[in-house]
Length: 479
Image (cartoon, rainbow, N blue to C red; front, side, top):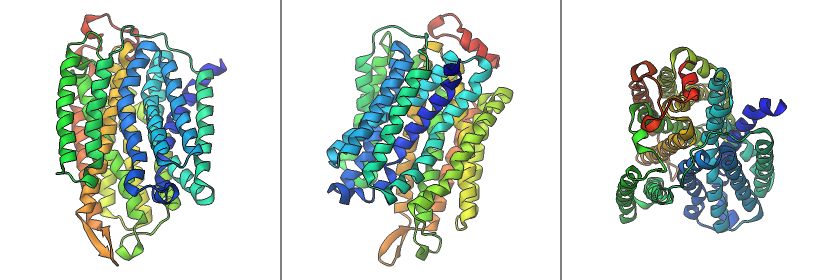
């Protein structure tokens, strides 16, 4: 049927749309204080609110999808994203804009929910390439969103951008409702409300401290208090999860190397990947008076990152073939090594534009390999009725890695500055140091990937707590 053939492209469109929504606000940030009458610190919450809500809602909505229906929850997440975009289009009040961006954070669950649907609905021979494509949509959407938003902001009223994304969001909701079938795989039971609240409180404390540490001061009472609060709350949450019959996150499953190690690799890969976009954007926009900067506009900067997004689209089927032939942990390790090679290119030459684009594209290629392998590793290691929640946790680990990467890059660049005129700007040495750190983290991710047990050493995937084997897992092991 036509609907069956459209399932993969419709879900991929949803993933790309989610990444575009997260990116489009970036070109606006320098002008929003003037447009809204708010301070620069307040305006930055339009990014922070999306980060926090996405981190909290991804595992929560993943669990809800496993229990109540993945298609239903996926549509709900896309609706919240679209409503947030409409609110941004209708208002210039910073409080409304921040609340709207928090609503849009729900879309972070689109990728894990879609991957779980693909596992349930597709035959084994199509599953690998579809999951790889779905994983790549994050980078593809980010690469498309930045130049698109910059063009709209440059030539039209900034509200026009949100009307455009609202229309795309409505199209995405309609397409998923029409083309995607509800998965019959469920894990019935009572939703773990205390677990959801505890995880939300712990993650907000952790990520708020990480994202605001540079602005508030890493030794300030607020940041130290947030980190201490995160430790206490997450420790209590861990204790509660181990004693709950149907927990939000099955920590016994997470503690198994075949599940826990991919989560560690996801955190490290998220760190390594995010540094590429952050540092490249700042470096090429640096003034030419620095001796290394190219003085590019935000539109030109977006076009520099665009080849990386195209590469992610082209290499997603390649990554699936490597995983089918050699196993996803080899694909993950290879991807991490390619990321490190990309940073080696950046360290070798970050003055010529073509070398900057080449290095950034190599990093994107490695990210495609790594990101496509991570959900496949999770799918092989967890029961079918827990795939959305398990992949939600994996995406959460990527998000935490990206938040830590942002803070680390900012800290490095702040401590390596020089005056150009009377304005302090990062030095080339600071950028190269950031590349070196990201490359080292990528190599660490590769080492973690190689320690993940293979199917042969674990006797295959089994259901948690001694339940029978799942035919989906048997098919995956034979892939």
